[in-house]
Amino acid sequence: MREPASRADFEARLRRIGDERYHDKHPFHGLLHSGGCTMDQVQAWVINRYYYQSRIPMKDAAFMSRVEDPALRRAWRSRIEDHDGTAENEGGISRWLRLAEAVNLDPEYVASTRGVLAGTRFAVDAYVRFVRDKTLLEAVASSLTELFAPKIHSERIAGLLAHYDFADDNSTAYFQNRLKEAPKDVAFGLAWVLDHADTAEKQDACAAALTFKTDVLWSQLDALHSAYVAPARIPPGAWQPGEGQLEKAA
Ligand SMILES: O=C(O)c1cc(C(=O)O)c2c(n1)C(=O)C(=O)c1cc(C(=O)O)[nH]c1-2
Image 1 (cartoon, protein in one colour):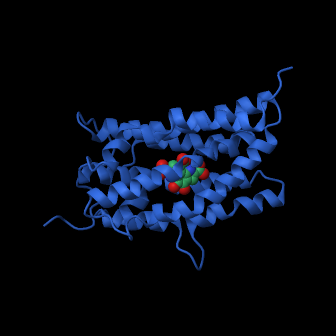
Image 2 (cartoon, rainbow, N blue to C red; image 1 turned 180 degrees about the vertical axis):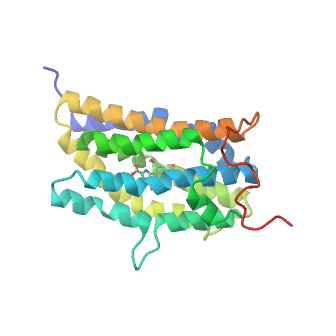
């Protein structure tokens, strides 16, 4: 029988997956963060990325519906509140729609998810299904891309503020908040995975789940890049620049 890797080696294996495959290395993020995106491309990103945001609490609800341990459900449920909000706190979805307004998109249009690329839908829906259908261990492991998210959120805040007129504390509030919320989630998720992946096979399954998730993220940006960056090839039915605007440009 194969021995499982030590905790430290297993964690290093998971972190290497992020080093090699996380979507901070995708060329679309290079464009966005360096000020190279046109406003049409920024709008396309906001519209498509909303679909990911909108599905995250649904995948967390799918996860929780399968958890029998009340302590695990209690640790997990703040993820849903972070996105959907509470009576006291605005959630991430509403913050994302503030970003939509700041880039002159009609938030109702964005929330309708009309015009979202098929490639975005396929990738995001696959993530929700993965979490619904795989083991709880694989589901938690697939959330661990958030280990690598604070770096990209910091880069994004700095890049947007430096390069785009729409960027300010209001429009970047989503990312500012994630910097506060994500560390507690990922510390819990990582410890849970390290505790529960107690065989070599389970460790392999966790690595595969995290790899799958990096593919989910990368594929969304591939779809966006192919549709909206020259030579742009917008698929039938997808958002066309000029649609869903808050107000007509003067
Ligand atoms: O901007 C990003 O690059 C990024 C990446 C990820 C991620 O790594 O999945 C998440 C987020 N943002 C995010 O804001 C978020 O709320 C989130 C939840 C999850 C998850 O898998 O449960 N990932 C992410």
